[in-house]
Length: 116
Image 1 (cartoon, one colour):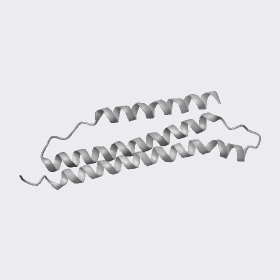
Image 2: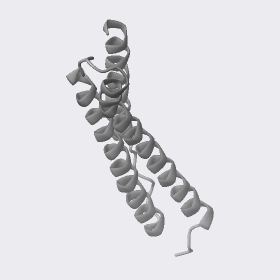
Image 3: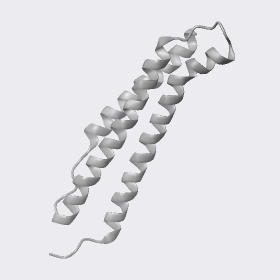
């Protein structure tokens, strides 16, 4: 069996890096959202921290962890398929779930900004 074109492996690695960047960005934003309540308390003493900050921040961090995990699992599945000459597995379900979760958290952030 012929060795697959190395460009396919490189594309798979670039895709993994994109998943990792996305996950890191979501996690960093989640951390910032979670800590923004503490920052507001420092900048405006006497202002109460809203507990929704922490929950939304944790949800974003978890979405980031999920993105990195999905990317890693997808990378290994595609890498194995390329090595064995099989068709590349579909990962649409994981992408859809992660997208919906991120959209829901973003909508909650928007609603939170409107009511506060």
